[in-house]
Length: 166
View 1 (cartoon, rainbow, N blue to C red):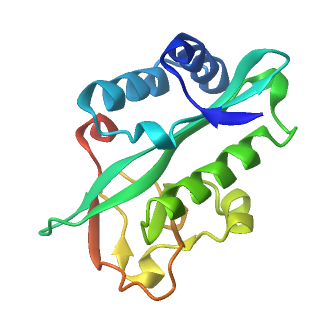
View 2 (cartoon, rainbow, N blue to C red):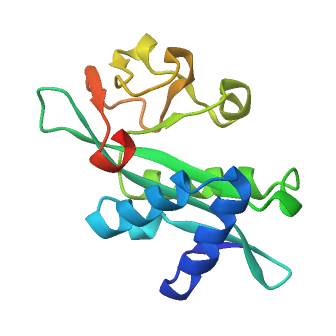
């Protein structure tokens, strides 16, 4: 089951990310995005299985250099290791795309494995004029899903929010 995250879910969400990534960076990112109000609460989803939170995805605001444009970025996405490869991650991505579309936003960015995200309609962002931020590890991993084909897409270098720059 996929649903919007509730306040009571956040300790479990942090634990899912800690187990999924084996480090403290992603739980720190989740905490900082929430504390700074950069996340969109209606776009923070959890996957629930066997009565517990087993996955989470968030979307938060990023900018475009020399512009007041704000765009949504999907990140982080984590699934408890015992529940990976069972479709929970895919269901969370689909919920995010549907949620962003429902907000009327024209696109969703992600930095991740193209082989995973291409099945959801993500393509290289730089091919559409959205350049990766300097912190992006690989140009080819910075991608965009265009949700409104009629929208004029912004052009320029994406600027991550402060929590992503750490």
